[in-house]
Length: 102
Image (cartoon, rainbow, N blue to C red; front, side, top):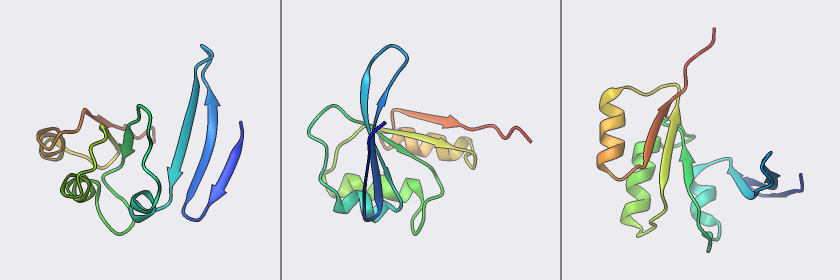
């Protein structure tokens, strides 16, 4: 795994067990994503409902208003049915609840 750290993000290559090479970027804040260069290849954005400074549904709206069209998958331990409906109606491709194991 190769790591490259920049302010507000972490970038690395991940090779799946099937040998697929994926480029992954992790952002510390939603604004760090907006300040980054948008990908020029097939991509998706995995968002949580709880983000630093803005919630994921609000950020989905920010992206839409900015004309940034990237498939969004919500993955959260803090979601409910109304949130999932709102996310999907706004264009999310999936809303995955994370179940607490405690």
